[in-house]
Image (cartoon, rainbow over all chains, first blue to last red; front, side, top):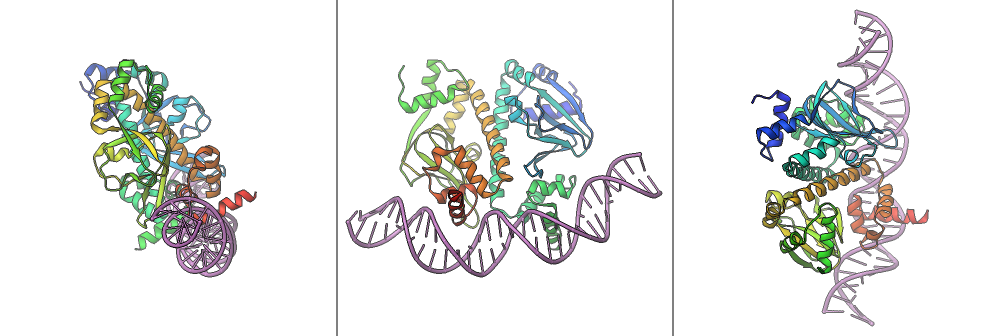
Length: 197
Length: 197
DNA sequence: TAAAAGTCTTAAACTAGTTCATTTTTTTTC
DNA sequence: GAAAAAAAATGAACTAGTTTAAGACTTTTA
């Protein structure tokens, strides 16, 4: 059966870890919601109860919190083939502290809390999918924060550039600074220094 | 049936997320290995292939890496009722970059890679257990690193003291510094300042 | 297409945390 | 229980990154 692109992308993603029958694919897709977010608009804002988890099929979004001083800290740039959302809020049904804002016109597939629970009942294999997905997220999250801890801002910038060459051209220097964990002014200094080398 | 303490602890831990029959409990326990580690000895060292994941039933261990400069970065203190290990190495069968060293005489239950795979085959419910365990680890990991990022070292120390009053008395100030992410000298200054307040 | 808003650059003064060196205190070991 | 080893305290000189402020450049919007 021929699927539309966005569905094909998510089925391919899931199929990396579990095998689905045609029927299961249909069932799974029926539990997903299409979502579009225009550039500069929010998918989620602090205070919201987040009732969806998202898979990005097109575009780019930044996921961030604001600290007490109002400074943004970006925890990820979510692009095509990434999963995002606020799992803590999604699971506990408490208000989120996150903002998710599109930096480009974007398209997503969302799964609601109710459908997420239903999914495990109807296709228990998905426990395995999510077990592996979370396990891998945990590994890369730990690796990343462990790696960052011993590097200077300049080294973190160079590492980001090497690891995500496709993302770096799609975001502003200011957002990159908020991800690296420094001020935009210092980011500017680092970039001009690194380019001079 | 009466279980020994260490088995009771792990069964209680697992039972928070899934229900097991007596038979399943027996089967599960048969897949676990008893491990003892004397104070100051290693459970794991960088370069090892880690063939076990661990549940601590007694004692305290520090999990850390050494950066290029040879400085230690402690990622967790594992005490009773905690899970630990190096999941990346465990899953990918690559050498670990971690050291795990007992700071007290400790007792653990280990599950080998082979038994971990077997567990999912024999009791598929464990996919759910690990799905939830990893999901919750991910949530608390993200929360912790997000929280830390906007705090000063002094604030991180105060937060640690509040959150883990039971752990703080069991570890050295030097190890706490390696966890907080500062030098022992600066840790010493912070502590004497906070105590003076 | 002009005005407004946001982003980037540069520079000087500042601060949280480091480094290095020394002394005191506590813990370990035989 | 004395000697050795490790941990903690203190202080002075240093550095990575911040803050504030102002001007130049780019993008967005009406």
